[in-house]
Image (cartoon, rainbow, N blue to C red; front, side):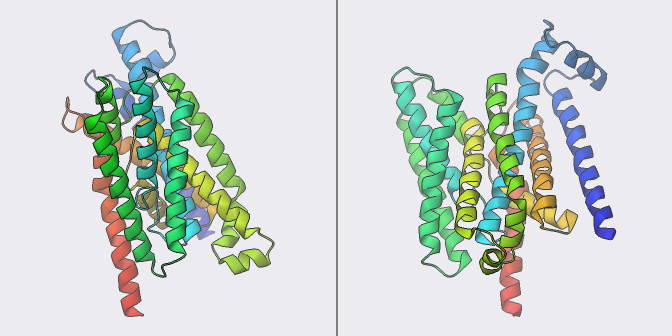
Length: 339
């Protein structure tokens, strides 16, 4: 009964925060708007006033993108933590986001050099390929190292290498539109269109549905691969599904917003602490809501803290997410020392 009450309270808190941040992100900006004005403009999507255009063409798609992509990052982190059985695993920490970033940069530079514009699906496909390559390397390394700390270091090194190569490509690219690529490489939810929102919603919500469908076998897998196999779970298939889903979700984020750091590690841990459980059936929706809340809050700060200068979203998420990762690593090390 106490756990059920805690779960209801946790969901209520996340939904309240989500609703508040959605309204704040729509209201706050260079042109301030009152909540009543926002709700009035939402009822007239074809309005031609300056406020209506700002709301419908800039703030609303950006706010939805931050919520969707934040949820996708948190889901990706939870799936990776389930796969590796480690709370520090995440798409940014393991270098998966950086691999996706490099692949998207290569695709964009190749297209820009030929005067072509890549559709959203092509960007997601490129990011997905980069994510899978980075994940494949991590899996190969994981079979040769026994300590998770070494695996994390390998992932960080992969991230640095991919980021360095991406920076070199951006620096020496000749196309005038490369300024947009540079801004993207720093991480941002700006410039999102309604077409982008529709594409990312399709990918992210489909990924969320697939993750929920895997919640029962994931629950068994979290008790150990041997236990999962004994209760009828196809462990090899489940592991493949976890990798594909987490790579697809992180690829979607990287394709539209660039690298966004530490959300995939910090949010699942904070959600587990809030709800007092790591059962996938309860934790997956909570992670999605928590990721949306986290990224909406960070994007609000990125836009307004030093306005009119906008901060890179990855810098803001790192400020709040990196201490959680550091605390997790110190706690795990302390637990080994005590043992």
